[in-house]
Image (tube, rainbow, N blue to C red; front, side):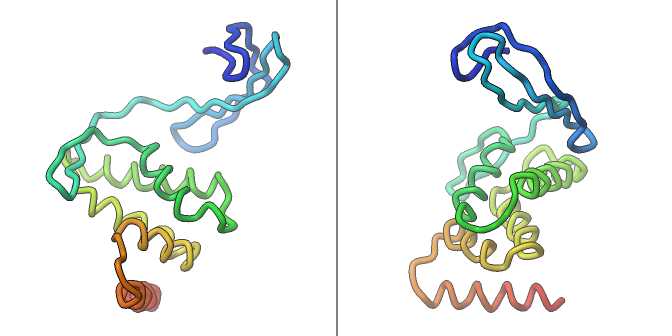
Length: 152
């Protein structure tokens, strides 16, 4: 482990907590520059393949899901912990499904489902990017779909 600020390897752990069932959060301080940062440690899981819309196949990357959500909801009032919980739940659902290959469209729908439960506007913003809206009618259709999903 190296300090992200000064690249020193002289670090100490200030605090250690379990932030979810399989993740350990460590608060660290650099002995050299005295800056603090947080690291997360988790058990490496079985790899999954994700089939993209254009047919490409790539390895599952939980951080890619998190970055996608963050882009869409960066100006919404959603905590980092809530986002981390969403990503963790989606990852667990995928792993528990037992599938080795998952479609990116299915992952996007899972994200939309979770976001709809906590922030409808955030879900709509995510859908606008994820579904590549090209017109106001696309936004209206998705808004109607999200409204119906919330009623059920």
